[in-house]
Amino acid sequence: MSLFLRPLVSFGVLISATLWAQPREGLIAHWPLAGDVRDYSGNGRHGENHGADLRAAGPDGKPGSAAAFNGRDAWIRIPGPEIPLGAKDFTLAVRIHTARESDDLPGDILSQYDAATRRGVNFGLLSLPGCLGSQPNDRNVHFGIDQARVEPWLDHGRPGQAIYVMALAVYDGALYAGTCEELGRVYRFEGERGWVDCGAPDRANAITSMVVLDGQLYVGSGKYRLSGSAMKDTRNQTAGGSVFRYLGGERWEHCGRVSPETETIGGLGVFRGKLHATSAYRPAGMFRHEGGDRWTPLGSVDGRRSEAIGVHNGSLFTTVWDGGGVFGFDGARWSNFGNVPETTQTYGFVVHRGELHVTTWPKGKVFRWGGTDTWHDVGRLGDEAEVMGAAHYNGKLYAGTLPLAKVFRYEEDTAWTDMGRLDFTPEVVYRRVWAMAVFNGRLFAGTLPDGKVHSMAAGRVATVDRSLTPGWHHLAAVRRGGRLEVYVDGVKAAESAAFAAADYDLTCGQSLRIGVGEHDFFHGRLADLRIYDRALAAEEIKPWSQTR
Image (cartoon, rainbow, N blue to C red; front, side, top):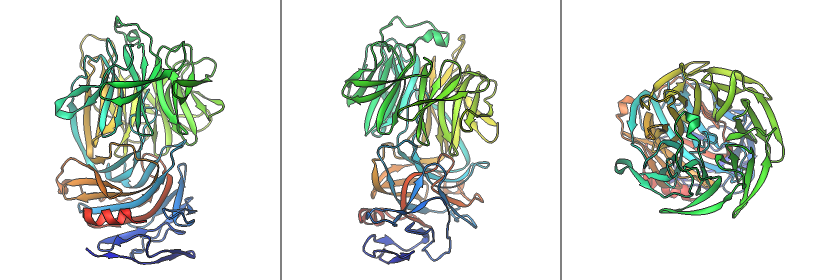
């Protein structure tokens, strides 16, 4: 396959012919995003700009060679007929830049997807802060297709002697679980080989939370009171309240106890490049890690306990176990965003279609934030009483419940679809689906009281199960026969499970959107976005991705 060089002129900006050497055959759309939103493939698929800054610096450092997206409302629409992907091979290729210190989600790169029919393609970076106490996914490349296909739940067994799978996180190519049992532990999922014990970081009965920061896995410990789930407490009543960094094997580095009075970490999250933690029980508080074992107390609102840490559009958000409110923190000051209707406790956060959603007790509802202190009811999940962990996966929002440990999928308005029950433990008051994560192209969920992990698949998804580092990268998403592939900087980094090509006709009747999708608006810079109606070979992608 020959490579080609050609100059591009747009709004007086000359894109050097020596900048990128790129394949030409099969090119059906090309947006350099260098000063304009025109299509340079010759097919006339010119864009409509909705707020993207076309003066941004690209990989060469020159202004006007990339488009910057603010993560809030900037995007580009490609009007007219949808890009004809159908059931054929294709390649999506783009250069992408994200910053290390962010106060927003990285979001979707592009989408051509119909949520009503669950049909089309989703491509972006997945981060899920506020999935209860954890951020299970951090900057994971997510490439999914669907034609309304669902595969049933798989039972992946019980990590150790878990009563409660309280945390899940994707780290360095693997899925990790934090448990509540007599001595809280961390386990790594090894597929058919089951769960590998990664040790007990603390002497408390629970690892309550997990997060990845700068390519490192951190966990929070706690003395979880199982009586809050109408169960008998463990014999071990040792206080936790510490944070640990994983060193590999069964080794952990102590990063300090957030305060002498804190016995249980409620949530861990990252905001503007810093690790933050909340206290699940009184005394209430949020804390910022300053390195080593040092933590700065950031206070609370009226002594009310914060739990989950969410990040959205420039602010850190916390759910509240006292009074059913939601609080915001801008790095210096707290804000009270009001009490959520029909709610005495708020639990987790998830961003869907660019808007913040919160899960609640005791009506089993999810609410969408309308700004200031306004909350919109988006429905009750069956007859359930509590909604806990929620995740975005292949274009749709999923949430777990109590008392029957079900998972529901959000459709439209106030409609939810029951995706099944995961815990059938008899003669207990409550069963929970608490923790969620997207790993190896599947949605995973952890339960109480049987302490198991389950997973399901919607469509086909290839996920890069490592955090994408900040800065410029070249990404290529390839549909090749019965597989999806993702290349990062020219190296194949992910592959989906196999599928029958005829089962996935992606014709959906929707226009292509750049910088936005069903999850969130993109926050970063994009350059040289291309679509091919064939699967590029690895030897074509590698030299192209490595030129600048």
